[in-house]
Length: 110
Image (cartoon, rainbow, N blue to C red; front, side, top):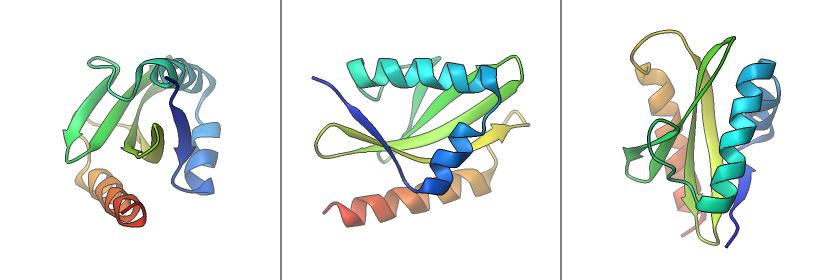
């Protein structure tokens, strides 16, 4: 069974496309695994954040990024939001935006 990856918006897709080469390559590696094995690959690649929100843990020689995503009916993974990680803890505003987008996606798919 194969999973499909879509994006919350074109802005999110463009942000992913604009990641530094090393980080983007690792993102591509993780998403290929997700297409084959599903959204929850486990640590250290992915982590469940609760209430259907997941975090992809992406890194490269240029730094660290986090990408939030969820799943919807039909084996679809929706990339909601991402940010370049600069501190040990995920900033509340980044998590809040991902949760808002998760609620919007859930509302659209009910």
